Amino acid sequence: MDKGTVETIAAERLSADEYIDFLKRTDLGSQYPKERFRERIERLLENASISLAARTEDGLLVGALLGLTDFAYWLYVTDLGVDRDFLRRGIGRRLMKKAHELAGGERDIAVYLIANDKAVPFYESIGMEKSGEVMKYDHIDWTDFTV
Image (cartoon, rainbow, N blue to C red; front, side):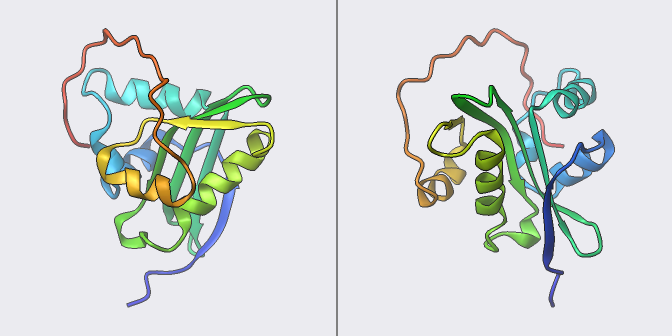
């Protein structure tokens, strides 16, 4: 059964309700802490420098990318997800390419992200490599849960 083709990938601010519903259909739904979940998702969606949506011809959100950038040197991808029913169709690759272009292009912009172990092969397939140079300061409350 054809689940629809992806017609558009475009810059778009997503609503919290739609994004939370989308998270349930992806592997991103377990990457957030339970503490103040909805409030923090709302802030994420409001403040991301780059917010991209991949939609089917009937408007279903099947892919999303959120990122922070200075539009001069770097892009940090906070979220990249694809609906499980739409995996292996090039959506993630297209979202990354569009985000990189919007941030300033690969000649000027370095891309960073934190990948879960299951996603590493995808990122390697699009030319990314593991880096041991990332530093972190992480003292937040974090109760694991899945949306």
